[in-house]
Image (cartoon, rainbow, N blue to C red; front, side):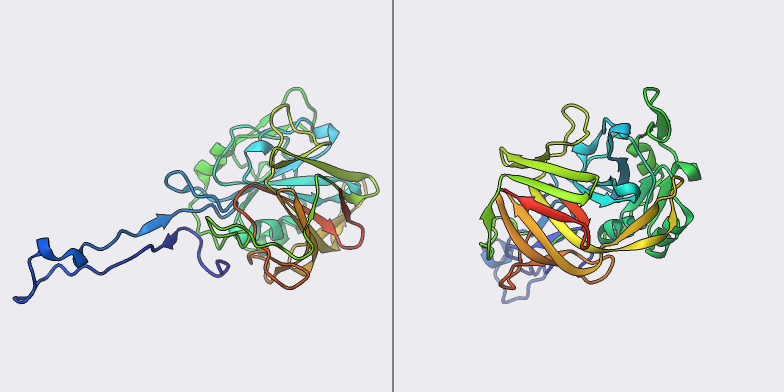
Length: 337
């Protein structure tokens, strides 16, 4: 489908006729040659993160992944609602962190920004995203570099960071993403994040689809994220967003993936996990108010994510914003009602 193409513009040809401008002596005058008028080529510019058409020219900036604290200590979260996609990932100590992906809109206030992890390589690679964080451990930087990704961190004197005087370190770092973008070079986006449902088409009924209005996703014994569905969107019911800044997802996706020890410990002595967002495994895709058990596949670190249902039929993602719960196959779980 779209997975193998360089994703900058998708050309949809409604009817393309070759128009010959030179006429021979036997040709009719151009005025009489209706066949040479041809039909125009419609160019549809589509977001690699949402599948939505851009209202005008596509952004020239790369996709950015910004690491956001996801605890009461780092609350409130700013700018998360302006992301095109959000991924919740496991970090050390049984807590989670958000990887917010921005392309369409670049907020001037995102926070509170925290450090990167090796898991971010798998999150960022499908769209060649630049990873923005407060800092990171050496092994995590190495994993990101090996994936061929660019990082912008305060530890390395990247621009755009400021201090929230109401908070204490390490929970007080704010980011102006427009400042970072001004330093970044345009890049070729490898492909769309998902296999999106073609515009104008309704997703096919998936095997085993069931109606749901709430979700509870457990990452560890100490952290569970809950969601509710209302007015066509999924929102966290126990999140930390600032008032009016909660992310509203059209699609909710749970990915069960393998987890390994990242090979180092945090300052508190906790082992740091790394979730491997590559390969295949079980998952759940929730489109609107319908949940379906799926098998996800992501052949390479930078591959498009695809899904099939229990019957082996493709499950495509409708255009819109998506929240991904990236949980461990061994200790993660999700329930829907």
